[in-house]
Image (cartoon, rainbow, N blue to C red):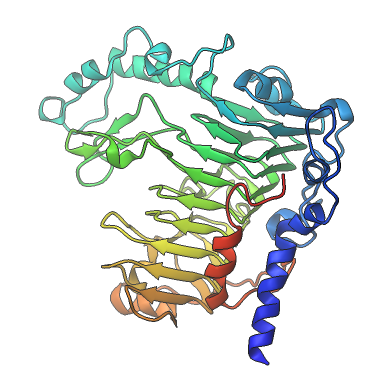
Amino acid sequence: MRSSRLTAAVVGSLLVVSGALVAAAQPAGAHGRDGLSLPARLLGRQALPARDGWAAAGPGTSGGAAATPDQVHVVRTRTELVHALGGDNATNRQNTTPKIIFVRGLVDGFEAADGRLLDCADLADPEYSLDAYLAAYDPASWGRVAPAGPLEQARVRSVANQTRQTQINVGSNTTIVGLRGATLSGLTLMVDTADNVIVRNLTLSDARDCFPAWSPTDGDAGNWNSQFDLMSVRRSENVWVDHNTFTDGDNPDSGLPVHFGRPYTVHDGSLDITHTASRVTASYNRFVARDKVMLIGSSNTVGPDVGRLDVTLHHNLFDGTMQRLPRVRFGRVEIYNNAYRLAGAEFGYAIGVGVQSAVYAEHNHFTLGTGITAADLLYDWSGTAITERGNWVREGRGPARLVSLLAAYNAEHEPDLGGDVGWTPTLRSGPVLPAPLVPLVVQALAGADRLPV
């Protein structure tokens, strides 16, 4: 009897995954003049299901569902993407017209208006070069103080040049859907002061920073810090991020050189949710072989973020990722039915418990490589408590088992974290799976190219 219930739960998840059944059940039909199949057009107008996490709160999240036919676009280039978002990248975040944008093929953030691909040298300020920067700010001669002066100012101007080129600004009431194989490469999808946004079925790859900053007092030995995320949500509400793949592609930081004794990293976050953003649901995404994955809240300063940063993470796959899975400040963040496959000497932690955070983690599944234990999965970033239950862990080649992440952490760390964050999630559109089923469902369904478009 129990086996039948478990099988039914898996089948139900496969069928109703983020509304995929709605699209898949429709007849394929003929493609229209825009080249879109009927399932794709239906998917483009799909709203977040009721009660599907924090993004269903308040008015809910419908994206561009109300778009008129002239505001349905199929884009293949950066120029076409900017045009579909309103026409002027500098002001597109203010464009509240409902719009649905389908991405076909590869859109490269380094593509110029004339179609040629730019490189970092094209975006560099005339007074900046990496060789000069390394010579000027070598800690052996400069010391452990922040870079300053004309060369640092030239680096900052270079970053501004890249921001104008590779940060693509999204306005309110927008749905962006990738058609099969669609990739956004070398760009940051920026949702800032934009409410009611849906992003689905895209591979977001290699949002590299051409001009990382040297921060000599970051950590014991200093660090290189980059600016550009694959996707960033700031000062926005009701955002649904679903069935996407986040990756560094063929440009991992592990393959880059070491400068000043520290890895020269050119990537920042995968999906960062900061600056008073709230009501965000991230579902069925795949985060692959990335270092910094998800920052929820960007500062320890008690201020505008208090009472914000409400985020739901469910049915996501964190595969070979190192830290911030997520790291949380202030927000009420529910983390359920996610699968974690964690390995490597550079692994840091999974869930970061930060200042005034209220994380509720249940029925997740962790598969851990050699040298990683359940005690390593939480990290105390000046937080006080986490509520967790029903989580399963498989360490090395041992069997998966029910583990209290909190008890494992507290057994090896001081001070202890508490177990009650003072709230219980209520926004759930379907049943919560028992953790042993989570890897099966998430592996099959998470990531880009799983939806019928």
